[in-house]
Structure formats: structure tokens, C-alpha cells
Length: 231
Image 1 (cartoon, one colour):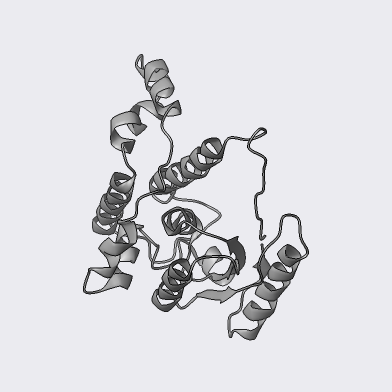
Image 2: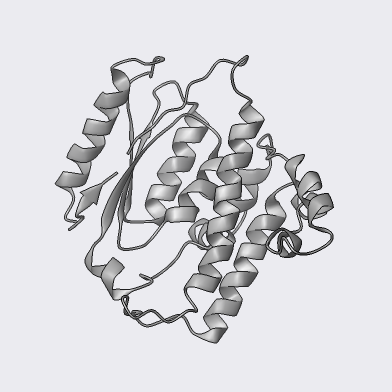
């Protein structure tokens, strides 16, 4: 599914949408640590993560959350995941006022300054390095995304549903900055199952949107990848 969200300022709050996206990211990452540790009668775990790997993964997720400005000071995950806690109402009210701050100009520079940019990105955002189950390994999916700006937000969203057996197509709006396009080319270099291309300038509700989706499907079909379903 390739979706581009357009809205009028008097109808929607941009901060509200950003908060929803990152609430999803945080919930998914934390829920994963519980889900993956529970045996399932229906899903056979494929070489399950060891205790050491789980600890490393939790540490990486913690680092990823630390990047979010003022997140730790305003959002208490242990309390929010326990509604029976007497501190829950106060914690929920405080967390509801926090929003994702994307205007961090030094964000990408910290990765460029490292000896291995790909390794730094993988560790910081906890990209999974192997399938979580045999079922998922045997049924790879394909995803399409249409993006315009904000590499920081994109990395959080992408890492929330990234799996190494899947295929990903990222269409970049032709109006995007040169720096943003270069950053996505770097991501494509780091992850062989992520494919990037620049599409036409996207207009509000214009035909360029479905065209970008179809181009993504075409490009994924050209790859030697056994994906089963596109979304």
C-alpha cells in the first residue's frame, strides 16, 4: 500500500499525526519483545533469538528512543503499559502532550561521521536481521512507500515493520531535496531488499500517486525476489 497523506491545517493537527505514527512504532517495538518470547502452537520460531540477542535488541530499542527529544522525560512506558498503576492517569496526561520533533538538523550527520554508516543505522534503529518465524520466512511480503522529506521519521516508521525476508520499494517525490534523495540512496546501499527511485513531482490527489504505486510494483517484479503480496 502506498499512501500519501494530505490535509488542511484547519482539519488536522500535524503533530497529532506524527504522535500517532511514533506511538505505533514504540508499541510495536516493545510488544515484539513480549510476543517473540511466547511459544506458539501455530508458528514455528525459526532459530529464535537467544537471551543475549534479546538483551542487545532491547538495548538498541532503548537507544532509538533516546534519540527522540524529551521522550524519556515525558513518556513512562512501564506505567503506560500498566493501567492499574495509580500513577497511570498522570503519566497518560503527560505523555499526551509529547510530540515528535523532526527538526533535528544534526541527526543524519551523526551517522555520516561514523566509520560504518550502515552498521550505525542498523543498530540504532534495531532493524531485524533474520525472520521471526518459519511462516514469515516462507511468505515474504512487498511494501511500497511514497515519501517527501524527514529521514528521521522515515527511519523510525520503516524500522517498525522491516523484516529481512521482505522487499521494500520507496518512491521519492520529485520535489524532495537533493540531500533527502542522497540519504535514501545510502539506505538502499545498506539494505539490499530496499529499493529506491525518484518519481515525478507529486501533486495533491494527482495521478502521480497511483503511477508511483504501479512503478513500485513493476520495479519489485524486476527484482529476483519471491515476494507473495504487495501492500
